[in-house]
Length: 158
Ligand code: HEC
Ligand code: HEC
Figure 1 (tube, rainbow, N blue to C red):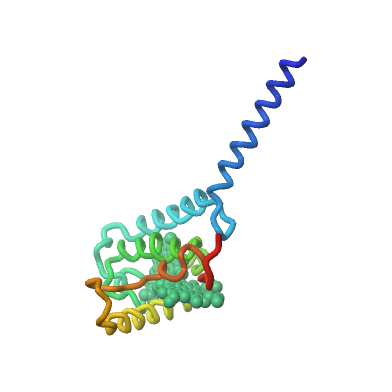
Figure 2 (cartoon, protein in one colour):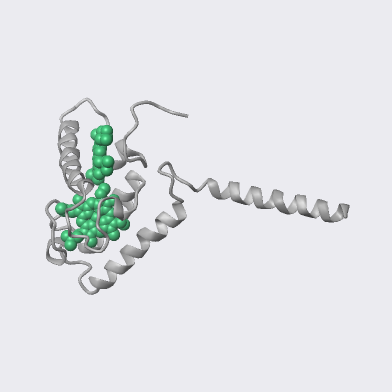
């Protein structure tokens, strides 16, 4: 009986520790990083399937509604979406897209993202005018501000 109890205690401790180790992979927005990454990969694979043979063609000749990223190879646009935008904000594709129609502009976040690209370009220009900066090519991107969150922080937290 005592042995059984000890076995039960060890078992539940193991289960608890295991679930805690899983909590570590929950990101700031409450999604499991693993399932978020898997969902993003699924859409990317799906779209790569549709554009097979056209990976290196300009995005605007492959996709329907490209305003900002014209000329960027189609395959590279998907990398920007997956490793750039989504990761910078810590979101899935569905934060900006209706995932059954990626060309749709119905989500406000997609429209904002275009303005953010424009704003980032303006900041890069301003940066390049600060001649005192020592580095060769000072620059910024979405991660500079967002750092994995939808709303950039205004103070350091711990
Ligand atoms: C932060 C917002 C944001 C996120 C997150 C995002 N996208 Fe986008 N996506 C955009 C914007 C903005 C455009 C339009 C770019 C332009 O106008 O040049 C776009 C365009 C696209 C297009 C072209 C659609 C067409 O036919 O015109 C595809 C495909 C796409 N995204 C796929 C994805 C996938 C897959 C993911 C997830 C891995 C993703 N996006 C995540 C903002 C986002
Ligand atoms: C200079 C800092 C900065 C940079 C660079 C930046 N952002 Fe933002 N972004 C912000 C701020 C600040 C907000 C407003 C957050 C708030 O108060 O709601 C915001 C908001 C957004 C939103 C709306 C959030 C929501 O509710 O969905 C999206 C989408 C977004 N940014 C995408 C991007 C993308 C994509 C890039 C890179 C092309 C980018 N941002 C670059 C500062 C920045």
